[in-house]
Length: 319
Ligand code: A3P
Image 1 (cartoon, helix red, strand yellow):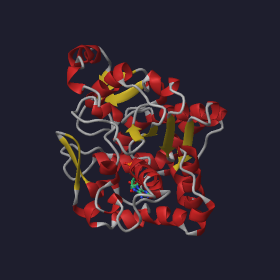
Image 2 (image 1 turned 45 degrees about the vertical axis):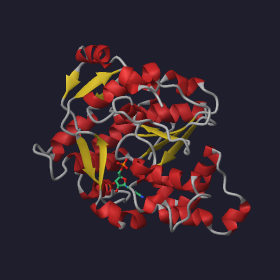
Image 3 (image 1 turned 180 degrees about the horizontal axis):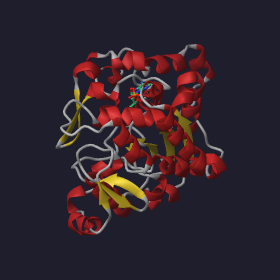
């Protein structure tokens, strides 16, 4: 367990005070532009402390995402895969806790809370940090792996817009304003397109280190992608497990239909940090592909698609 309390937060806060700051599509705090990405003020202290002090281990599997791209689902799937010999679909902690509680706190938040980003009996860690802002030891440590999940920017955007406009929000974002901010890159860990592109390129350069998953692909072929994820993480399903239907069981346990209807996810709360608590149900809105069609005008959708084309075309990435 890292000694969080001894970290010099004051110096970090001084660094942060000199950075560009703006209101973005985010929960009530301002965003700060740090090394090319807009990061929430609170998280940024942790991002910088992690860059300075986090030491990756060869057994680490780091789950990474932009919020609203499928983080809750990826955590559930990864947890179910790596603990499948410990729990089954009847006694899994996923039935009584939101997946955010089943895996340790985000690396960046662990540095500003008195919590560890590691659990002694689980190789899973998580982060929202962009690839280029990850602590150097993540890249330098052989064996340490990254799984990244992302999603069509239009669906991530709609999911994020709903999330930040939660019932408690006193100053909700109008759709037009939110589109403007997101397309300018002014959102949690934005620009979204750059965050995705960095991990995409890393997965092409280092396929054994970085697995790049698309939300839509898992939705359309969950069994294939759960097997792929398990294999990448070093927990492949044996033929005998496959024939017993264990892949399918993981898929069902982690499905939106199953998790969103559990009592804990209908009524429970999740505390990300002291002053930031969420209703668990806010992490389970619709779980659908293409919900953007119900909200974005054709002009708005075209704007997203133009940015995707401009930022991603050369890389071969598309949704
Ligand atoms: P929608 O708002 O489009 O419904 P994150 O976990 O990164 O915060 O992302 C939340 C999004 O993932 C929400 O999308 C949520 O409904 C969806 N989601 C949560 N759990 C899911 C699951 N088990 N399967 C599919 N989608 C899920």
